[in-house]
Length: 401
Image (cartoon, rainbow, N blue to C red):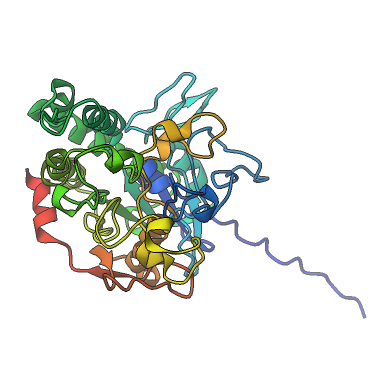
Protein backbone atom coordinates (compact mmCIF):
# COMPACT_ATOMS: atom_id res chain seq x y z
CA UNK A 1 0.00 0.00 0.00
CA UNK A 2 1.42 3.36 -0.97
CA UNK A 3 1.39 6.13 1.60
CA UNK A 4 1.60 9.83 1.10
CA UNK A 5 3.45 11.95 3.63
CA UNK A 6 1.66 15.15 4.55
CA UNK A 7 3.91 17.87 5.89
CA UNK A 8 2.69 19.57 9.06
CA UNK A 9 2.09 23.30 8.67
CA UNK A 10 4.93 25.39 10.07
CA UNK A 11 4.40 26.65 13.59
CA UNK A 12 3.28 30.24 13.69
CA UNK A 13 6.09 32.57 14.74
CA UNK A 14 5.49 34.62 17.84
CA UNK A 15 4.40 38.16 17.14
CA UNK A 16 1.40 40.46 17.52
CA UNK A 17 -1.35 38.39 19.16
CA UNK A 18 0.60 35.11 18.88
CA UNK A 19 2.60 33.32 21.55
CA UNK A 20 3.22 33.83 25.25
CA UNK A 21 2.27 37.30 26.51
CA UNK A 22 5.13 39.72 27.21
CA UNK A 23 5.41 42.71 29.53
CA UNK A 24 7.91 45.39 28.49
CA UNK A 25 9.16 48.21 30.71
CA UNK A 26 10.51 51.50 29.36
CA UNK A 27 11.90 54.59 31.04
CA UNK A 28 14.54 55.52 33.56
CA UNK A 29 16.17 54.39 36.80
CA UNK A 30 12.95 54.13 38.81
CA UNK A 31 11.80 51.24 36.63
CA UNK A 32 15.08 49.84 35.25
CA UNK A 33 16.15 48.24 38.53
CA UNK A 34 18.66 50.84 39.73
CA UNK A 35 19.82 50.01 43.31
CA UNK A 36 18.14 46.61 43.00
CA UNK A 37 21.31 44.97 44.30
CA UNK A 38 20.76 46.16 47.87
CA UNK A 39 18.11 44.91 50.31
CA UNK A 40 18.23 47.60 52.98
CA UNK A 41 21.48 49.18 54.15
CA UNK A 42 24.36 48.67 56.57
CA UNK A 43 27.31 50.92 57.32
CA UNK A 44 29.11 48.10 59.14
CA UNK A 45 29.30 45.46 56.41
CA UNK A 46 27.88 45.82 52.90
CA UNK A 47 27.40 42.05 52.69
CA UNK A 48 24.52 42.28 55.16
CA UNK A 49 22.42 43.98 52.47
CA UNK A 50 23.96 42.54 49.30
CA UNK A 51 21.06 40.54 47.86
CA UNK A 52 22.23 40.16 44.26
CA UNK A 53 26.02 40.56 44.37
CA UNK A 54 28.37 42.23 41.86
CA UNK A 55 26.53 40.77 38.87
CA UNK A 56 23.25 42.44 39.87
CA UNK A 57 23.08 44.59 36.74
CA UNK A 58 24.43 42.11 34.21
CA UNK A 59 21.78 41.78 31.54
CA UNK A 60 23.66 40.66 28.44
CA UNK A 61 23.04 37.25 26.87
CA UNK A 62 25.66 35.36 28.87
CA UNK A 63 25.28 37.30 32.12
CA UNK A 64 28.80 38.70 32.09
CA UNK A 65 28.05 42.42 31.81
CA UNK A 66 25.61 45.14 30.86
CA UNK A 67 24.13 45.48 27.39
CA UNK A 68 24.41 49.26 27.84
CA UNK A 69 26.88 50.34 30.56
CA UNK A 70 25.18 52.11 33.43
CA UNK A 71 21.58 51.18 32.59
CA UNK A 72 21.51 48.99 35.73
CA UNK A 73 18.77 46.63 34.64
CA UNK A 74 18.64 44.48 37.75
CA UNK A 75 17.11 41.02 37.87
CA UNK A 76 14.90 42.36 40.68
CA UNK A 77 13.30 44.91 38.33
CA UNK A 78 9.53 44.92 38.08
CA UNK A 79 9.30 43.75 34.45
CA UNK A 80 9.51 40.10 35.49
CA UNK A 81 6.06 39.65 36.97
CA UNK A 82 5.64 36.02 35.91
CA UNK A 83 1.94 35.11 36.14
CA UNK A 84 2.15 33.45 32.74
CA UNK A 85 4.07 36.33 31.15
CA UNK A 86 7.59 36.91 29.90
CA UNK A 87 9.40 40.12 30.84
CA UNK A 88 11.63 42.47 28.85
CA UNK A 89 13.33 45.42 30.53
CA UNK A 90 14.39 48.14 28.08
CA UNK A 91 14.55 50.96 30.64
CA UNK A 92 17.86 52.63 31.45
CA UNK A 93 19.09 54.43 34.54
CA UNK A 94 19.77 58.07 33.69
CA UNK A 95 17.51 58.09 30.63
CA UNK A 96 15.59 61.17 29.62
CA UNK A 97 12.74 61.34 27.12
CA UNK A 98 15.25 61.88 24.26
CA UNK A 99 18.37 59.79 23.66
CA UNK A 100 21.67 61.16 24.98
CA UNK A 101 24.57 60.20 22.73
CA UNK A 102 28.31 60.23 23.23
CA UNK A 103 30.48 58.49 25.81
CA UNK A 104 27.60 58.23 28.31
CA UNK A 105 24.94 56.82 26.00
CA UNK A 106 21.44 56.83 27.46
CA UNK A 107 18.57 55.62 25.24
CA UNK A 108 15.47 57.78 25.42
CA UNK A 109 12.01 56.73 24.34
CA UNK A 110 12.61 57.56 20.70
CA UNK A 111 13.77 55.97 17.44
CA UNK A 112 17.46 56.80 17.66
CA UNK A 113 19.65 54.27 15.84
CA UNK A 114 23.41 54.70 16.04
CA UNK A 115 26.69 53.01 16.77
CA UNK A 116 26.11 53.32 20.53
CA UNK A 117 22.73 51.63 20.45
CA UNK A 118 19.03 52.20 19.88
CA UNK A 119 16.40 54.40 21.43
CA UNK A 120 13.90 52.55 23.59
CA UNK A 121 11.02 53.06 21.17
CA UNK A 122 12.99 51.48 18.33
CA UNK A 123 14.11 48.64 20.60
CA UNK A 124 10.46 48.08 21.56
CA UNK A 125 9.39 48.08 17.92
CA UNK A 126 11.91 45.40 16.99
CA UNK A 127 11.19 43.29 20.06
CA UNK A 128 7.42 43.49 19.64
CA UNK A 129 7.60 42.25 16.06
CA UNK A 130 8.69 38.80 17.29
CA UNK A 131 6.91 38.73 20.65
CA UNK A 132 3.31 38.95 21.77
CA UNK A 133 3.65 42.18 23.74
CA UNK A 134 0.47 42.72 25.71
CA UNK A 135 1.51 45.44 28.16
CA UNK A 136 4.06 48.28 27.97
CA UNK A 137 4.87 50.13 31.20
CA UNK A 138 6.47 53.59 31.10
CA UNK A 139 8.05 55.69 33.84
CA UNK A 140 9.87 58.73 32.44
CA UNK A 141 10.41 62.43 33.06
CA UNK A 142 12.33 62.54 36.34
CA UNK A 143 15.68 63.12 34.67
CA UNK A 144 14.18 65.74 32.39
CA UNK A 145 13.49 67.66 35.61
CA UNK A 146 17.13 67.22 36.69
CA UNK A 147 16.54 64.65 39.44
CA UNK A 148 20.22 63.77 40.04
CA UNK A 149 21.45 67.35 40.06
CA UNK A 150 18.70 68.41 42.48
CA UNK A 151 19.58 65.62 44.93
CA UNK A 152 23.25 66.57 44.69
CA UNK A 153 22.51 70.24 45.34
CA UNK A 154 20.34 69.44 48.36
CA UNK A 155 23.02 67.26 49.95
CA UNK A 156 25.77 69.81 49.27
CA UNK A 157 23.67 72.55 50.87
CA UNK A 158 23.02 70.38 53.91
CA UNK A 159 26.68 69.51 54.41
CA UNK A 160 28.00 73.04 53.86
CA UNK A 161 25.63 75.07 56.01
CA UNK A 162 25.08 75.01 59.80
CA UNK A 163 21.77 74.21 61.49
CA UNK A 164 21.58 77.81 62.74
CA UNK A 165 21.93 79.19 59.17
CA UNK A 166 20.39 76.58 56.93
CA UNK A 167 21.00 76.90 53.20
CA UNK A 168 18.01 75.23 51.58
CA UNK A 169 18.18 73.85 48.05
CA UNK A 170 14.56 74.33 47.05
CA UNK A 171 15.03 78.09 46.69
CA UNK A 172 18.33 77.90 44.77
CA UNK A 173 18.12 79.37 41.29
CA UNK A 174 19.51 76.17 39.75
CA UNK A 175 16.72 74.11 41.34
CA UNK A 176 13.89 76.58 40.79
CA UNK A 177 14.75 76.71 37.08
CA UNK A 178 13.58 73.12 36.69
CA UNK A 179 10.12 73.95 38.02
CA UNK A 180 9.18 77.11 36.15
CA UNK A 181 5.87 76.99 34.28
CA UNK A 182 7.74 77.04 30.97
CA UNK A 183 9.98 74.10 31.86
CA UNK A 184 7.12 72.05 33.30
CA UNK A 185 5.18 72.55 30.07
CA UNK A 186 8.25 71.60 28.01
CA UNK A 187 8.82 68.38 29.96
CA UNK A 188 5.14 67.50 29.74
CA UNK A 189 5.29 67.91 25.95
CA UNK A 190 8.46 65.77 25.77
CA UNK A 191 6.84 63.01 27.84
CA UNK A 192 3.77 63.13 25.60
CA UNK A 193 6.02 62.71 22.56
CA UNK A 194 7.63 59.69 24.22
CA UNK A 195 4.24 58.09 24.80
CA UNK A 196 3.29 58.74 21.18
CA UNK A 197 6.55 57.06 20.16
CA UNK A 198 5.51 53.98 22.14
CA UNK A 199 2.21 53.83 20.26
CA UNK A 200 3.99 54.36 16.93
CA UNK A 201 6.46 51.59 17.72
CA UNK A 202 3.66 49.15 18.44
CA UNK A 203 1.78 50.10 15.26
CA UNK A 204 4.97 49.73 13.23
CA UNK A 205 5.43 46.27 14.75
CA UNK A 206 2.00 45.26 13.47
CA UNK A 207 -0.28 45.83 16.48
CA UNK A 208 -3.74 47.28 16.51
CA UNK A 209 -4.29 49.72 19.36
CA UNK A 210 -6.59 47.28 21.16
CA UNK A 211 -4.04 44.44 21.15
CA UNK A 212 -1.90 45.91 23.92
CA UNK A 213 -2.15 48.19 26.95
CA UNK A 214 -0.03 51.19 27.88
CA UNK A 215 0.55 51.62 31.62
CA UNK A 216 1.82 54.98 32.84
CA UNK A 217 3.64 54.62 36.16
CA UNK A 218 4.18 57.54 38.55
CA UNK A 219 7.18 58.04 40.82
CA UNK A 220 7.14 57.08 44.52
CA UNK A 221 8.12 59.35 47.39
CA UNK A 222 11.62 58.19 48.47
CA UNK A 223 11.89 60.31 51.64
CA UNK A 224 9.42 61.15 54.41
CA UNK A 225 8.61 64.72 55.34
CA UNK A 226 11.24 66.30 57.57
CA UNK A 227 9.32 65.54 60.77
CA UNK A 228 9.41 61.82 59.89
CA UNK A 229 13.20 61.56 59.46
CA UNK A 230 14.72 59.63 62.36
CA UNK A 231 18.02 61.57 62.45
CA UNK A 232 18.46 65.07 63.82
CA UNK A 233 19.18 68.02 61.56
CA UNK A 234 22.06 68.96 63.88
CA UNK A 235 25.46 67.47 63.11
CA UNK A 236 26.21 65.11 60.26
CA UNK A 237 24.61 61.82 61.33
CA UNK A 238 21.68 62.44 58.99
CA UNK A 239 24.02 62.02 56.02
CA UNK A 240 27.00 60.02 57.27
CA UNK A 241 24.89 57.48 59.17
CA UNK A 242 21.51 57.56 57.46
CA UNK A 243 22.49 58.68 53.96
CA UNK A 244 19.68 61.23 53.83
CA UNK A 245 21.46 64.57 54.20
CA UNK A 246 18.62 66.94 53.37
CA UNK A 247 17.16 69.72 55.50
CA UNK A 248 13.61 69.17 56.80
CA UNK A 249 12.28 72.04 54.72
CA UNK A 250 13.77 70.55 51.56
CA UNK A 251 12.30 67.12 52.34
CA UNK A 252 8.91 68.78 52.84
CA UNK A 253 9.28 70.63 49.52
CA UNK A 254 10.23 67.41 47.72
CA UNK A 255 6.95 65.76 48.77
CA UNK A 256 4.64 68.75 48.59
CA UNK A 257 5.96 70.44 45.44
CA UNK A 258 8.61 68.61 43.41
CA UNK A 259 7.05 65.13 43.33
CA UNK A 260 3.52 66.39 42.51
CA UNK A 261 4.91 68.53 39.68
CA UNK A 262 6.90 65.65 38.20
CA UNK A 263 4.03 63.18 38.48
CA UNK A 264 1.61 65.82 37.21
CA UNK A 265 3.68 66.29 34.05
CA UNK A 266 3.67 62.53 33.45
CA UNK A 267 -0.05 62.12 34.08
CA UNK A 268 -0.85 65.25 32.10
CA UNK A 269 1.16 63.95 29.17
CA UNK A 270 -0.82 60.71 29.24
CA UNK A 271 -4.03 62.73 29.07
CA UNK A 272 -2.65 64.86 26.24
CA UNK A 273 -1.92 61.95 23.90
CA UNK A 274 -5.44 60.46 24.25
CA UNK A 275 -4.36 56.90 23.52
CA UNK A 276 -7.10 54.30 23.98
CA UNK A 277 -7.11 52.06 27.02
CA UNK A 278 -4.28 53.71 28.96
CA UNK A 279 -3.92 52.47 32.54
CA UNK A 280 -2.24 54.22 35.47
CA UNK A 281 -0.08 52.61 38.14
CA UNK A 282 0.25 55.24 40.85
CA UNK A 283 3.30 54.61 43.04
CA UNK A 284 3.25 57.94 44.91
CA UNK A 285 2.68 56.41 48.35
CA UNK A 286 3.89 52.87 47.64
CA UNK A 287 6.86 53.12 50.01
CA UNK A 288 5.26 55.16 52.79
CA UNK A 289 6.44 53.71 56.09
CA UNK A 290 9.51 52.11 54.46
CA UNK A 291 11.23 55.17 53.01
CA UNK A 292 14.84 56.21 53.48
CA UNK A 293 15.54 57.38 57.06
CA UNK A 294 11.87 57.01 58.03
CA UNK A 295 10.90 56.28 61.61
CA UNK A 296 10.27 52.62 62.56
CA UNK A 297 12.77 51.23 60.00
CA UNK A 298 16.55 51.37 60.01
CA UNK A 299 19.98 50.02 59.11
CA UNK A 300 20.64 46.37 59.95
CA UNK A 301 22.79 47.35 62.91
CA UNK A 302 20.08 49.72 64.13
CA UNK A 303 17.25 47.17 64.07
CA UNK A 304 19.33 44.25 65.34
CA UNK A 305 19.12 41.96 62.31
CA UNK A 306 21.99 39.95 60.87
CA UNK A 307 21.30 40.45 57.17
CA UNK A 308 18.70 40.73 54.44
CA UNK A 309 17.75 37.07 54.77
CA UNK A 310 16.82 37.42 58.45
CA UNK A 311 13.11 36.99 59.25
CA UNK A 312 11.43 40.38 59.30
CA UNK A 313 14.13 42.16 57.27
CA UNK A 314 11.66 43.34 54.63
CA UNK A 315 9.53 44.99 57.30
CA UNK A 316 12.22 46.56 59.46
CA UNK A 317 14.62 47.92 56.84
CA UNK A 318 14.30 50.64 54.23
CA UNK A 319 13.10 50.11 50.67
CA UNK A 320 15.04 53.09 49.30
CA UNK A 321 18.82 53.19 48.93
CA UNK A 322 21.01 55.62 50.84
CA UNK A 323 22.43 58.74 49.19
CA UNK A 324 26.09 57.80 48.83
CA UNK A 325 29.03 60.24 48.82
CA UNK A 326 32.51 59.30 50.11
CA UNK A 327 31.42 55.69 50.67
CA UNK A 328 31.68 55.13 46.90
CA UNK A 329 35.41 55.94 46.76
CA UNK A 330 38.04 53.32 45.90
CA UNK A 331 37.04 49.69 45.60
CA UNK A 332 33.67 50.27 47.25
CA UNK A 333 30.81 48.14 45.88
CA UNK A 334 28.49 51.16 46.06
CA UNK A 335 27.78 53.51 43.16
CA UNK A 336 26.64 57.13 43.34
CA UNK A 337 23.90 56.55 40.79
CA UNK A 338 22.21 54.03 43.10
CA UNK A 339 21.40 56.84 45.54
CA UNK A 340 17.76 57.48 46.51
CA UNK A 341 16.35 54.70 44.32
CA UNK A 342 14.10 51.76 45.15
CA UNK A 343 16.35 48.99 46.44
CA UNK A 344 15.83 45.24 46.18
CA UNK A 345 12.75 45.37 48.43
CA UNK A 346 11.44 48.46 46.63
CA UNK A 347 11.90 46.91 43.20
CA UNK A 348 10.08 43.74 44.24
CA UNK A 349 7.31 45.80 45.81
CA UNK A 350 6.82 47.58 42.49
CA UNK A 351 6.76 44.19 40.75
CA UNK A 352 4.04 43.01 43.11
CA UNK A 353 2.01 46.11 42.27
CA UNK A 354 2.52 45.64 38.54
CA UNK A 355 1.40 42.01 38.69
CA UNK A 356 -1.87 43.22 40.19
CA UNK A 357 -2.21 45.77 37.38
CA UNK A 358 -1.69 42.95 34.85
CA UNK A 359 -4.72 41.27 36.41
CA UNK A 360 -4.42 37.98 34.52
CA UNK A 361 -4.26 39.78 31.19
CA UNK A 362 -7.01 42.33 31.82
CA UNK A 363 -4.99 45.36 32.96
CA UNK A 364 -6.48 47.72 35.51
CA UNK A 365 -5.44 51.03 37.07
CA UNK A 366 -4.77 51.61 40.75
CA UNK A 367 -2.72 53.23 43.49
CA UNK A 368 -0.30 50.93 45.25
CA UNK A 369 0.64 50.74 48.92
CA UNK A 370 2.06 48.40 51.55
CA UNK A 371 -0.54 45.82 52.54
CA UNK A 372 -0.02 46.26 56.28
CA UNK A 373 2.31 48.94 57.61
CA UNK A 374 4.40 47.63 60.46
CA UNK A 375 3.86 44.05 59.40
CA UNK A 376 5.08 43.84 55.80
CA UNK A 377 5.29 40.20 54.79
CA UNK A 378 6.74 38.35 51.84
CA UNK A 379 4.59 36.57 49.29
CA UNK A 380 5.31 33.08 48.02
CA UNK A 381 7.34 34.73 45.24
CA UNK A 382 9.53 36.56 47.78
CA UNK A 383 8.02 40.01 47.29
CA UNK A 384 6.62 42.49 49.79
CA UNK A 385 2.86 42.04 49.97
CA UNK A 386 1.27 45.12 48.39
CA UNK A 387 -2.29 46.27 47.78
CA UNK A 388 -3.68 47.89 44.64
CA UNK A 389 -6.53 50.18 45.58
CA UNK A 390 -8.60 52.77 43.73
CA UNK A 391 -6.64 55.57 42.10
CA UNK A 392 -5.76 58.37 44.49
CA UNK A 393 -7.91 61.20 43.16
CA UNK A 394 -5.63 63.84 44.65
CA UNK A 395 -2.75 62.40 42.65
CA UNK A 396 -4.84 62.05 39.50
CA UNK A 397 -5.95 65.68 39.73
CA UNK A 398 -2.32 66.67 39.09
CA UNK A 399 -2.83 65.83 35.42
CA UNK A 400 -4.90 68.99 34.97
CA UNK A 401 -2.37 71.30 36.58
